[in-house]
Length: 255
Image 1: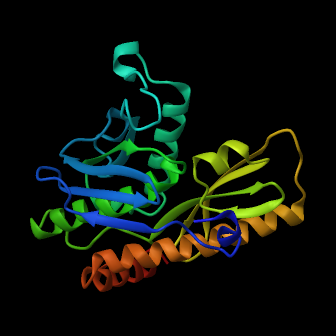
Image 2: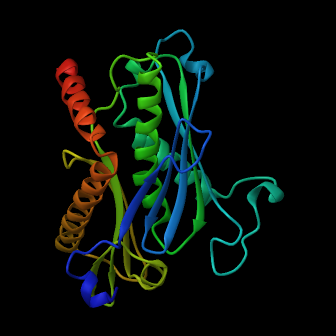
């Protein structure tokens, strides 16, 4: 897809392949252009110490690049003895984003562990991880509901994420690696299905940008995330109606 086409509010071709792995309660292969991430959701009947006895659940995430997900081999962080600052930042972002749309008090004292493994990277790995993890998380919640561990899906909204940026003066949506590398401005945006912001990460490289440019980029991200969530719903098929019903029920309960 050319830069000229991307100016016209286009995200890269995206797909969510559910039940990608045999063992996890939820698993998805998310593809965004040439970026591919395996997202799994695993349920454990325990919570961190600070939540014991509260009746509240937890959602947390881990993220990793496989050694040859990039054009040169990347050493496994486990062999270096610790995760990089970038990895910790992305893990926290994924966890925060997912917790924003889950009714943790309705999850019960259990933890859903999200694991995002990038098997091929071409830009937007953190945003693809968020969008894919949401689908894996919902499949794990469906699994709990089938086992009658929960009565209603404890979810408050859909969730998607995308990158936007300014490359050679052009506002682009869903940046690939080369576009991200040369961008003078780069934003990662996380939003809900009701078009509310969860998180905005943005920076300029060598140049400043105006409030008008920021507004334009956020509008571009909003359009892209709307398309991503539509693709998520399509991947859920008939289950999408049950998710929307649970969202409405949980929002009414909160009121």
